[in-house]
Length: 159
Image 1: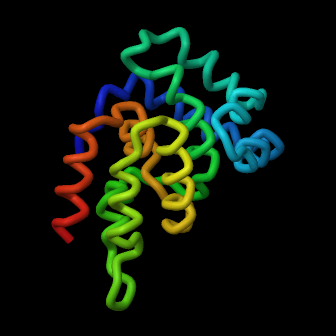
Image 2: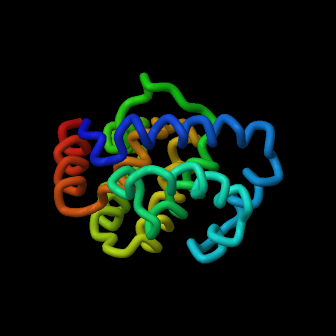
């Protein structure tokens, strides 16, 4: 899957920050309780990530979308590079239905604003039992647009 512009230079600080949340349980909990991106920006744990990434060229992160990345990554309980891409996970069959219904998936793809994308992906991360490929998630949020939507649709409908 295309990692978008959230390349290795941005992934490593993000993963280090996520691992650090294991020691900062209060910061993780505060981020998980956020219901809006405006709330995320008020959490000190978010600013730790922002400080780490703002030293990199903005091509590796996006200030408008970084709060969504931080709050959603804070929700992740288990990470491995072997975890399939998000749309593949969403398409996984549970009995006779997909884990994420086609209707919910279409609504996700219709998101235009970072706030709407955040709200939709919060539900998806929960449906995936908080087991997500963090760089994939970050790349999808960071690069959200027509090319990511198409890529996700091709992957989702392949299964």
